[in-house]
Image (tube, rainbow, N blue to C red; front, side):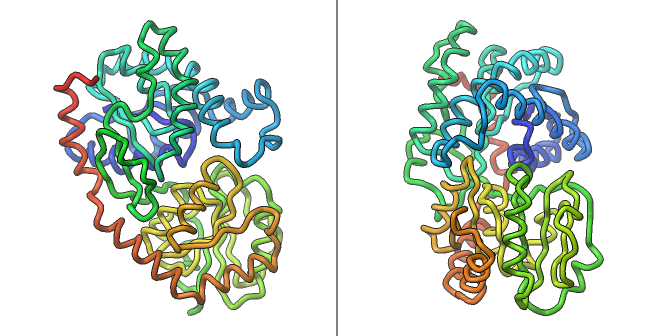
Length: 386
């Protein structure tokens, strides 16, 4: 089984539970991706291949070919990435690498994450079935149409029917709990539900103090690994929480230095990275950007969310959480220390938010593990996909 993803942590982590389950079941497993994810996967024990541009190269290509990302309105981020970055920049840059890997390694099946569009085309060209792994609520139908239209010329250039570029044509692995999922999921013909599981990796920073935090509410702050560059967002959050009777744990993201935020009061602990699996069960509130991984990891532990969406799918995810009653959303224009303090107090003291988060946690716990999808995936190797 060849797994492939964009060069981002949030795109790699959703594949890890299935890849580990496949390896444990005796299947040969490899991952193809650009840096830093290829190196991360290698550290995690997977066989790896380099495929596609690195995350730095993608950022450079966006700046050179598409202009300033900051100038794009927030409500257009989703269509911009699916229609111009994932398909326009990354698909052609990754396709030949995947074809070379497939010729060398000869996989029986390819598993790609939702935003990795070279995988399905490479699978068709090599005659193997493919599986699409989601990482949150199903994208809006308009986004699926934009992505399919942008990918279609690449299929046509390869001598294949452009209509086959339509998303969700093959088996779709759905990690989204029912309370957050959208009605359009019923339109996906082949779907298998799998439980979202924290798959974080990295340094074990700060473990000594994690076990000795004072007995008071604990707030975890993360802006993920992409939308974590603006120190002023962290500063506004900390200014709002520093004087509150709470423990505050801030994960800046891999490669970010704790000293960037300067000295902090004793109730604030700043580090670069903490695996969610080791942390969420200790939290009373998670403040995050609304990335699918952070969102689902918090809700799997029954922890309500204060969402500060920055771009990409985060506004969409935040809307799903708010509609489910499991969190609140604070837009950039309202992101002040007083606003953070007010929202955090409402969420920590408001039982309805924790009850809603707990109900979603129960949904997630009842979802099948990733290993349950393996028999269905295996059956694809004997079928001729439409």
